Image (cartoon, helix red, strand yellow):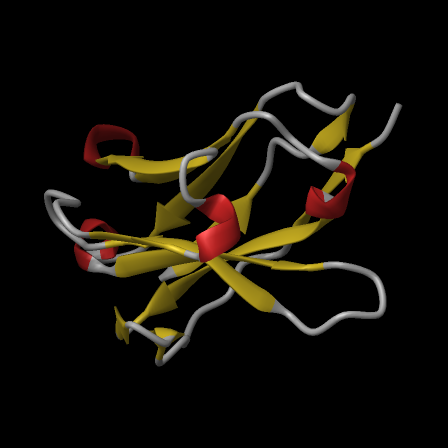
Length: 123
């Protein structure tokens, strides 16, 4: 499976942005997909995950709860990360990847990564 994140850009604090992650390859709709981000000088961290197929199960990092929403559209083989009330600390390169699963500690088993997309939140 191949993944491609897009939709990044420069936004002001408080604004919203939706990032699509488009997947291609056999069975791509059945993969669990996660969003991750890496800010300058910091380690990559998980943001949110959604289960394959119907996308009934989701995971959110604490900082994403209440502000970010993950969803998937299997007809478009895409997973979306809607980000509201963006803050300067959300500035990072955002990546999507397939994940094996997740638990209280976050996702694990990241196998296929897409190229990232830059999100900059600044006034």
